[in-house]
Amino acid sequence: MHYIILDLEWDSAYSVKYHRFLNQILQIGAVKLDTNFNIIDTFDVTVKSAFSKKVSGRFSALTGITTEKMLSGILFDSAVDLYNRWAGSDTVTMTWSNSDLFTIMENEEYLLNGGRRFSIERYIDLQKFIQGEMRLDGRDVTNQVSLAAAAEIFGVETDGFDLHTAKDDSLVCVELLKKCYNKERFEALVKNTSDPEFYKRLKFKPYAISDIKDKDIDPNKFVFCCEKCGNKAKRTSNWKYQNRWFTANFVCRECNNRFNGRVSFKKTYDNVIVRRKICDIKPKAVVKKDEVPTLSEGV
Image (cartoon, rainbow, N blue to C red; front, side, top):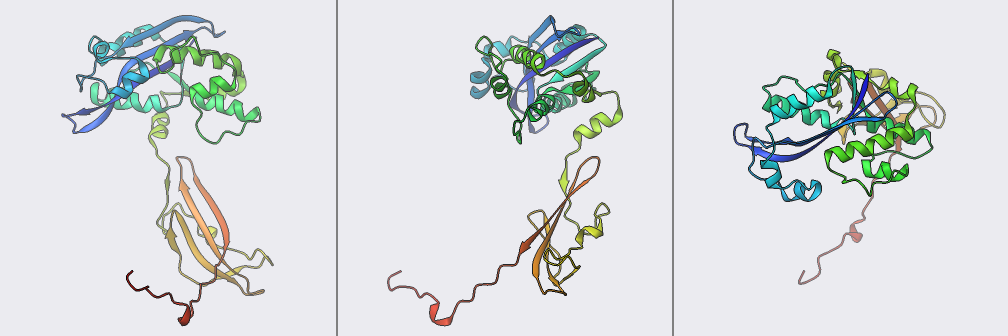
């Protein structure tokens, strides 16, 4: 078995044929490792765009890939064939976040007639694994951490690498993997891409449920108790949906405590995430007649 760390660089280009912008892959870089994470081989290829005759200035400045270099590259289908022969079989592929997989699927759909041809058997999101190790190390990680930031946190020297080039980004990932590897936690995140659920789960986009009659909503979540005395409260207004929250006013029959109850439902692939909170009801401001401001002359 071998491990592969795969990285892609892509640029946005407009397709006249499909009438939309696409993130076309313009560079494929990868590193192949043995079971001890020693480097066996590397892969690096530039892809010629099928949609554009030039690269954007931002992409060129970030990656160092000029229009001339892109135009001298090979077409995407040939690049994929080369990569697959290089990758071989019995591999676990890693990328820094699963955004590369979305770009691969988009390029396969529009450039390979929808056939999934990239050789990825088993897969792990390396960014997810590294961030998990950060949390276990006591670091507060709430947002996605960039590769450069992760390298700095773990003391991986990057001066000798050209970040934002596919092969060198893969090499930086190798050093991070060596510093953070835990066999049990790593293998728990490895997924088999041949499982039909893998790509269904990947494509699923979590969303906020806005229909109060949705079948995935548990009606019991709309029941609120008074925070002061613990008794069941009575709803005094209709439910309204605002800013992804269902909201309604409540009153406690025992202590007359009044409050606003709020519930949100987020549908994920596996379940529904429910959040509830209680807020004080702010009294409406009363403006006396003699306090109403008047317009000054000339305003």
